[in-house]
Image (cartoon, rainbow, N blue to C red; front, side):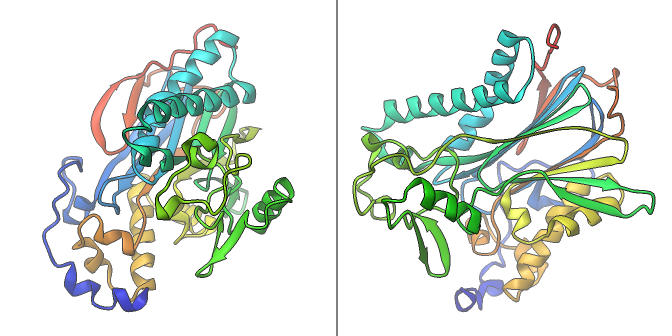
Length: 376
């Protein structure tokens, strides 16, 4: 890879043209890489939000939904194309609210039901489109969700996006705690789980060019979509996605890992990000950046730190990265979405905050439908 990138700096000296990217007023030139909200209010404090594009077509989608007594964060890291991640962004939150109202509560079972409804909804889209556009069966998305409500934090994820909690003790040192499981074949635990579930399949995990992959194709073991690895009716005759033998049973699942905790006063912030950030920053490095810098623009600062490290790994400069077009940049880093949520009022909401919906890579901020009246 390094040989291919040896002349990357000279190849990328062209003006950036990101027609879909927006930036806030007053940003400097380096921020033309990003969509961001430097600092806004949520129900329990403040938050910072940033997205950077690497692929020719952005495959990361994300959102923050602010209600009077709850906050919702979603990070959706697509692969194979943007359709699955976009579908999750447009439907998962609504599925969650619908089921929460039906059951008059928010719980792990409600979140699980929302994931299942969104998965079935996208599979229906695949079924309707498959005969004309079979490649849609290879589109999938990781999905990370966080809900702050009633003094609690609820987390759910499929895939390898990650949520990290920053807590501060009496010594004022920040401690980073990973709240999610990385569903990725690079993890020995994930490989062992897959081998246990598919003991009759010698090729369930295969190492190719130094990377562990499920069926030699995909790294994540859980996702929304990827229908060709879940249902035999969507098998693909495309070299990149062709299985060596017919699918016996699903090899991926949309079942989320779930986590709930009561928030405490020493819990200071949460970092939600797609795996492109964690590829270049450790949990502790990211938490230290948040803890030791001003809040305004902190998500953007995390992105820049990751991009600088990505550039260092391939022996170019951050300025070189800034000159690369979408598509070319994918050789250096992935699409990355980051949301940092500061926890200022963990035991009670800030009633003056308007109900708003923020969606990554889109400057249209609209009224949210995050109304939990009657839900206990």
